Image (cartoon, rainbow, N blue to C red):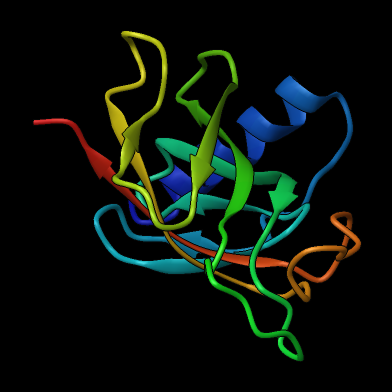
Length: 139
C-alpha cells in the first residue's frame, strides 16, 4: 500500500489543480532521460514533479530535402509543477546548455536532450513533435 501512496497523491493533486479528471499519461525517474509528446504530461515516479510539453515555439532546423549552411534549432516550452506549487514554463532550445527552471522553489533543472518530429523550417508547430527530456534535482 505504501508504494501506491505517491501515485494516489499525484492523482488527487491533478484532480484538484485542473478541475477535471486527467489521466497520468506516463511516469519518469528523476535524473533519467524520457520522451514526451507535444501536449502530453508525465509525472515523476516519486510523485513530486509534473512535466508538460506545452508548445513548440520555433523550428529553424534544416528540412530533410534541403542543403543548409546552418543546422538550425528548435525551441520548446516545457511546463514544470513541483508538489502543490504553481506551474512554471521554461523555454528550452535544442543545441543549448541545460537551463534551470525559473523560480527559487522548483529545485529542478530541466534539460532538453533532443527533439523529433516536424520537418524543420516551415513545419506545422502544433503537432507531431516529441522531446527527450531529463529532470534533475538541483544539488
